[in-house]
Image (cartoon, rainbow, N blue to C red; front, side, top):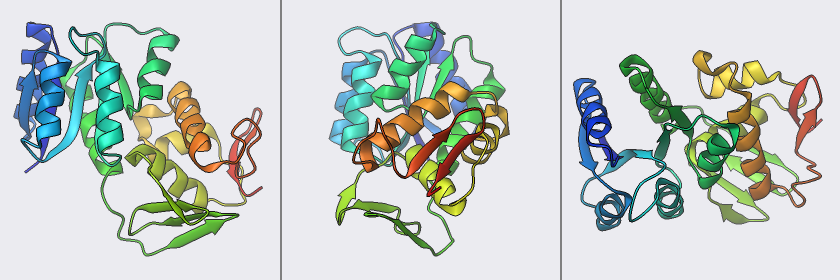
Length: 227
């Protein structure tokens, strides 16, 4: 059973999210503000696998809810929802810790596909592999990352991105290929999502994120690990 926690202050949008996600076969608990959603999450009322939250809400903003949930559970899938589609708004949502950013109005098929994609990224891998570069070690099966021997908490999307880059170590990989493999074919043009997620990942595993040694940018070509 998969539980989705929804936080949306607009009654119509909340009902739409709840109905659409329920029809897709998931159990849904919907809240009218961020504070009550956080209370439910913190209390462990349900075994939530996904959080879908509006960005602008009273009492506790969606951005703050995302930060709190991500800090409490690095492995949970989080989708930010907003009527704002500016680059700044998208970056704010992703920087807070969301795995994806959906702009209203959201079609039912798109919503379901995005939630499914987020859940896939959070699934354990069946491939036994341990990768290492410099002082960073990734255990794919255990879904753990260590830097200098200490555990580093990564979101499911950050973990999927690092795994993909390790599997393509020594190669320059085009953004479209990374997006299609990590997020899904529908994301091939979502360069901002990749840019922000790569930035978040560098902040966690690079000694100097502004001058990365592992995750390198090749202008006009793509990204590489260990090249």
